[in-house]
Length: 236
Image (cartoon, rainbow, N blue to C red; front, top):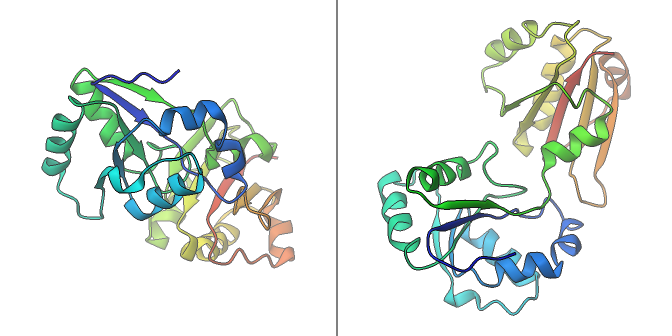
């Protein structure tokens, strides 16, 4: 249930792809987002486009949005939150999925806890948990690493520390333009029998989730292209 009062931060999910939108047009979800007028967003344009697509009667010009640009001023963000949370609820969104996972959303939530705000997560799509659910890999013992290091030697060193006998599922996400580069790195660094799940372009008509051994991936010649993907590594 939506709570419309000062001192509340809502962590609002964004669509992963076109197929997310129908699920997010549920009355409970729209009843929440239609009442939020103050937002913190990684990209203001993405937020406006999403709220328009909901077709829930939201007046986009009336929204006040603090944009978390790459080099945003943290003090400006804190001043914005200090002022605006006194006026009413504030929504936080990242570029896709649930905020707070490998994006600046965690900083906003941390600020809220430090200033006695009520931080409320709203149900929605998460690429990491959707991929894990469908992967067939260990969902009881898993480690989300977020984005891998850009340096190839550093990443290979990390992969060598992952024990082939460990039951832990290791999860990475990567920026779309580096998806194929990261895939090739995994195929060259991991033992042939390692299970690798690739979940690409989730909630899109041409997306896929597939788990097979590294040896099988090598034979497949799969090319992901410039599409967002989640990579899960596990034992046979």
